[in-house]
Length: 458
Image (cartoon, rainbow, N blue to C red):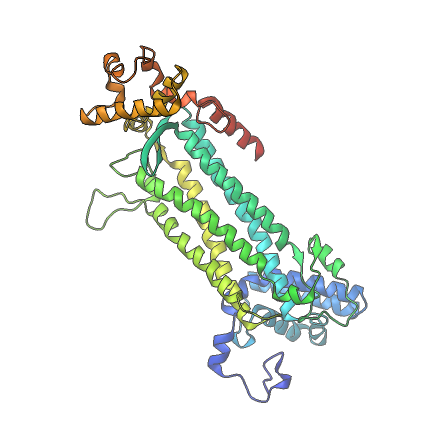
């Protein structure tokens, strides 16, 4: 008989050593110790309140679990692979400490609903932390936007110069993305924050448990409504992984821009030395390793989402051992997202902006061509005709290796008699930026308003 297993009564042969190691999860799920103990204390108190086990046993269980928590946090707890997971490790140690009372703890519950509880408790705390890290990055972006409110840069489409914009307007686009990310996390939390304990292995329990009492102790606003779904559901983890993937996608896009902007060709920004490395052979190099690594880690988080989707795609109800594979991608994603957000916030806060370089670049590439078309429309020309006029003017400039800002009034009037001296004031990058004074536009007044709104919304 497998006497070292808490479930070993039915077995007559010991578990194969390699199977024991292969199926164990204690190597990674031991990080759930705090949640497991907290859930067990709430469960024990409910069992006592309901008269399912004696209150004397509850007192011993709670005291014993609190001692085990102290031992784990002091690094004095030896985790055993033979005991498979964090749940069995803690329960076995409890029974060894307090005897018969410890063996009563598992009354009215299963490891299936126990692990579902632990994961929800853990993820609930981590989502709150991630929202805090998102706020830190948003704050860093707002700080840079405020400090560089008058810096003009080229806006791009297809990575080609399009129209001048404020650098702060560009940064505020990422504030919008990260604000949506925070909203997704907060929405995900609603579905995480539901108590599954009481579902048992799959069908509930014969004991008169009080699930609402446990939910109240653990600050869950609701309980799950179907025992089969309670133990087999990992939608909440998938939703978290999907929201995390979107966060990393946003950071990866920003990383790509920071990498480009910090090249000698752009020189729009300079990242602090603390977030870069050098070359082993080229002494002049300053490599943007942090944004490159965040860009790379994005694929890792995508992979974690796909891994769990694949695990879950063909599982029959209810619990299956496959679902043990939910924890490593979940834990890895939590660590990756938190680390990426923290380092990004610190990096953005210390980033130096080369405003003059951006301003010069904003005037290249016929960036105010659309402003000429708008100018002609205000003079009475239909937009499509104005578009054609400006297109011809640009072709003339390309042929003569000049920019539209270099054209004389006589040259402008070769393309349209409606053009007058006021054209020159209309096609500066400053005029182009401030002319876009519409909600969501890049005009300084609009960007200032958005920064204030973001500050007030935090």
